[in-house]
Amino acid sequence: TERTFVLLKPDTVRRGLVGEVLSRYEAKGLRVVALQQRTIDAALADQHYVEHVERDFYPPLRDFVTSGPLVAVVLEGDQAIEVVRALNGATDGRVAAPGTIRGDFSLSNRENLVHGSDSPESAAREIALWFPELAR
Ligand code: ATP
Image 1 (cartoon, protein in one colour):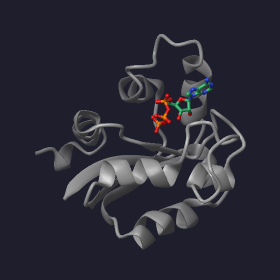
Image 2: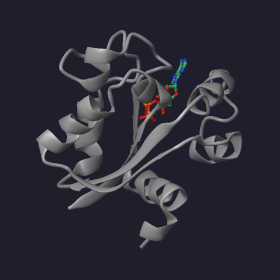
Image 3: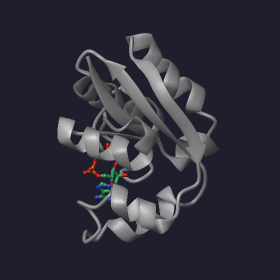
Image 4: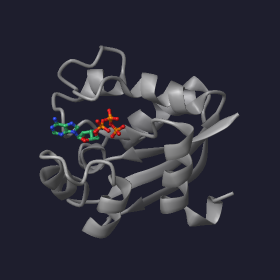
C-alpha cells in the first residue's frame, strides 16, 4: 500500500465540487487518511511548488492557490500515486480525457481542480510539509 498527497484547489471548493471529487477517489477504493480545509499563505505555496517558483506561470498560480480555502488530503491504497494521477487526468483541463476529474470539470490549465503527488519522493515531501504529524 502507498500514500499520496492531494490538493482540492480553491476552484474545487468555490464550485462546490469537494464531495464529487472526494467521492471519485473513495469509489476507486482509496482511503482518506487525513483531510483538512485551510487557506494557505504565499510562503506555503512556494514550499509546495518549490519546483515551479521560477516559472513564468507561477505568480498567477500562487495567487490562485492562495485565493481561498482549499482541502489538503492524504490518500492511501495500492499504487495510490499513479491511481490518483490517472483519476485526475492531464494537467490542462481543456484536453484532459472525459472520465477524469479535470476532463469532466475543468476547462483551464491553471484552475484544474486538483493536485496529486508525482512520485514517492514528492509524496513523502508533501505529506511532511502539509501534515507533519503524519511524517514517518
Ligand atoms: P499537479 O502537480 O498540480 O498535480 P501537474 O503535475 O499535472 O499538476 P505541473 O506541471 O506540476 O502539473 O504544474 C503544477 C500546476 O501548475 C498545474 O496543476 C496547474 O495548476 C499549473 N500550471 C501548469 N502549467 C501551467 C501553465 N502552462 N499555465 C498555467 N498554469 C499552469
